Amino acid sequence: MAIDQLINTYFAQFYNVHRQINPIRRIVIEDESFSLTDNEILTQDSGVLNIKLNQKGPVQICLWEQYFNQFNNLAALKPKRCDLLIEQRNKHFILAELTKSKSEHILPNVQSNNIGKRAYAWVQLNHTLENLGNVPEIETYFSTLEYKYILFAFRLTQDNTNTILAKTFEKFFKPLTIVPVLETEDNSIPFDFKYLQIQFPEAYQF
Image (cartoon, rainbow, N blue to C red; front, side):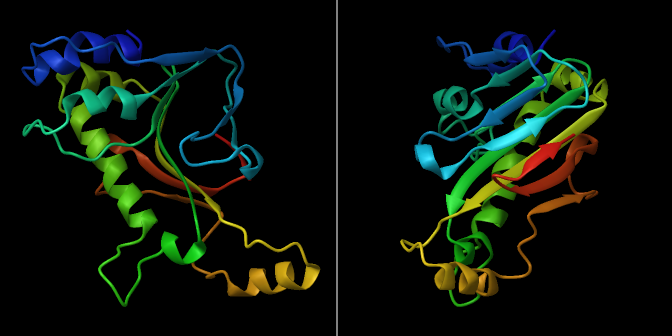
């Protein structure tokens, strides 16, 4: 079964939800190269995240946040959710959270309780992964995959200026700890997933 079929068949059943739940919405792309954007956050001229998988399509993109909103306040579920699930059957599976923000909002603010969007995205992605993986049929599906990632993709908000001088200084003001592409293995991520961080519009090839 593909991930949308597994979710529609087993997710609500596992969490003892017996009311009507709308099926998860999905988009199927017949090519291994595709672009992602969060329409609620990104404007048309803000760029998109371009992804190329190392195996030809099709690719299925499931709108997880929209589906999961039907389960709000269910005690058995961890509450945070990512934006999208991306699947290429028996090969790739990606949980994706996209955002647009100023650089100082990506990292923790040491002078406040703001943990920063990167840390918050980590929580969103891990909650989603655990909520899905608790379902035995989906956990089994995870074990069959070759490439498994939780993906945080961000685009930095640009200042309202087009001067060459301003753009030059902007590069110096960005924190060096924000890495455009970062891939890590972390034993705290369940089901052998890896963490991937991308600053778009950089393209990434899996």
